[in-house]
Image 1 (cartoon, rainbow, N blue to C red):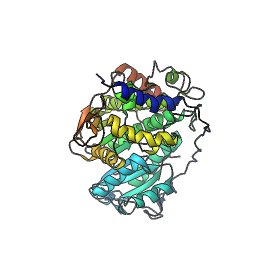
Image 2 (cartoon, rainbow, N blue to C red):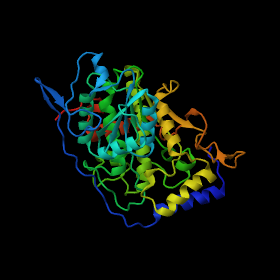
Image 3 (cartoon, helix red, strand yellow):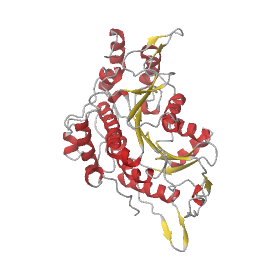
Length: 425
């Protein structure tokens, strides 16, 4: 049972509900179309990759070996026994901190899947990621074609070596937009990028990852999608997929919400997180036994100063971190959050499938005061990893199965989401 005090509710209402209803002069933005960049192949010449790969870490011409021993070398970079780990949204925030953490362990070769390749290369160096520990590749989750292009280029780059880990981290949050913005494929951006893009990506990667021993796939979740938490159950609006009327109608413009109701930016994000966490459970149910892949979700804690809140007003960005540190106890710093996400694919103890990982309490109550004068136990800094409980709505198998089938149809997969090979155009 969620426990709270009147002062906490009042503060939460001030920082969230008021912000959601405040007028904002925002400009509707749509994602730039991503043109298809082909891989050129010939039986008499090496494979040449386009600018989807960075040019500083890789030679211009890449030779892909056929034998397993030689395949330890990807694009001229020796991988050896390191895990091949893909992270979406790895050029900022949680994804970047996770990528840097994994690269510095020496146990992972990281594929940074990002919208802006040049930015990805720059921040990787700024964060001190060792040379030869990563590569930056283009991925625009707001374009289904870009997702397919990414998978094709990734498979060409790595040759026969399978991907060991996939972390689906990238997300957008547009709580103050009065009108929806649309992806290249006509989906509302929060659902299109956070859910549909990742849904297609995970399905296209299942067959390849099944070839790796101990493979893990993690989709970042959120307490905002779980109504059994303070942030998800007491802060308006609550996540609610309804009967998936919007998905049943195709989920494309002018339909902006999963339940078919009028657009509400803050709810659109929460709904997308419900879909993310449902996708994990469905992946586990459909593919864990046959592939051995461990499918999981996680909540890193409230990274109150994350770039995810960049569209919030300046007063909110200043007040929210203080509120989460000293009132709810749910605050966690960016570096620690990155370490937590990295732990899910690196720690030998995190091999169980269909788990929602959390730390330092389940965010189902306000933190308890500790000797240092700060509240603890609400999912914030510190604590050990544990298997958290999701809300009944997230664990609703009937709705999750329906969500899966409608999502598979929306992104163009075969019947009932059966993975099919990525197409090389």
